[in-house]
Image (tube, rainbow, N blue to C red; front, side, top):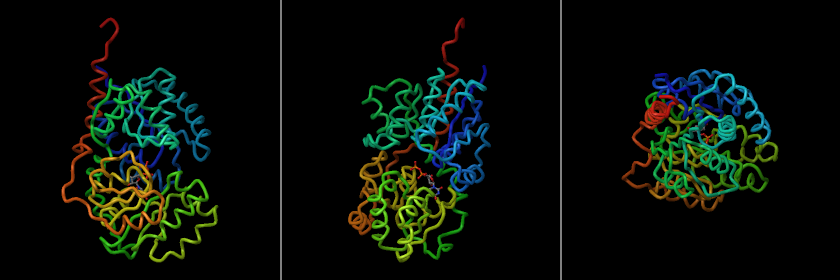
Length: 366
Ligand code: UDP
C-alpha cells in the first residue's frame, strides 16, 4: 500500500516550531513535501529555525515576502495552485492561523484536495482579529481537524463540526520536550547582564498592539510599567512600527529594558525557563510559559489558550499599564499543574491518524 502523500505548508515562525516535531513524525509514516510560503523571510524569523530545529529543507519556497495581507494571500494562492498541480497530494496540511494557513486551505479545497488542520478549534471569539478569521475559515474547510485541547474540540462541536476531529494534544508541547536538552545548553541570561529568576521576558507583535498610534503609545507605557529588568527580543514588525511612529527612541529612556533582535527557538526557550515571568501577546509563548511553569502576563483582552488563564498560570491585562503593573505585583502560580496539552505525542498521533485515514479510504473497484 502506498504511503499517504502530504503537502505541508509553512511560512511563519510559530509554524516552523510546530513543523519541527511533526515533520519528523510524518516522514516515518508518510511521504511529505514541505512548502514554505516565504511569509516570514527575515533570517532571524525563518532560516535560523530550519537550521537549529533540523527541519527538512523546503521542497518549494514561494518567496512571497512583504506585502499587504490580501496581496500576500493572492500571491500565495497563485503559487500554491502551481505547486499542487506539479505534485498532486493526497492531503494538504496547514498549521495554526496565519495568512499562509488560509492560503493553503483555500488552494487545497478549490483544487479538490482534502485538508488537514493542525491546531484546529482554537477560538479567541474576537471576530476582527485576523488570526481568528483565518482559523474559522480553515476549520470549516477541513476534513481532518487535529485539536490540541478539549476546549478546541468543544468549540468545533458548537459550530457543528464533529466528523474528522481528533484530540491529539499540542505539537508545541512536543517541540518543547524534543528540544529541552538543547535549549538548556544555550547561554544563560548573563549574556544580557541579567540574573536567572530576576527578569521579565517580553514579546509583543500582534496587530492589536502595533497597528494604530494609540496602541503603540500604550505599548510604550506598558514597557514603562515593568517593575524589574526585562529583555525584549523585538519582532521586526514591532520595531518598524515603533520607528515609523517616532517612538522607538523613547524606549532608550526606560531603565533596565534590553532590546535585542529576535532570537532563535533554543535561545528563547532558555531565556523563558530562567525568567521570573513572561509578558507577551504571542499565542505560542503563553503555552510555552505554562509548559515551563513560568507565570505569564498576556497583554490582550482574550486568549484562545483559555486553560492557561483558568488554571491560574496566565493573566489577561490588555495593553493597559495599570493592569500589567497589578499582574506583575502578584506572580503566584498554583503548585499543581494540570495536563491540558497532551503527553508529548501529538505529532505521532497526527501522523498515525493521517496514515490510518489514508489506508482506510474507500477505493473504487476495491
Ligand atoms: N520565539 C522565538 N524567538 C523569539 C520570540 C519567539 O523563537 O525571539 C518562538 C517562541 O518560542 C514560540 C514562537 O516563536 O515557539 C511563537 O511565535 P510568535 O509569537 O511569532 O507567533 P504566535 O505563537 O503568536 O502565533
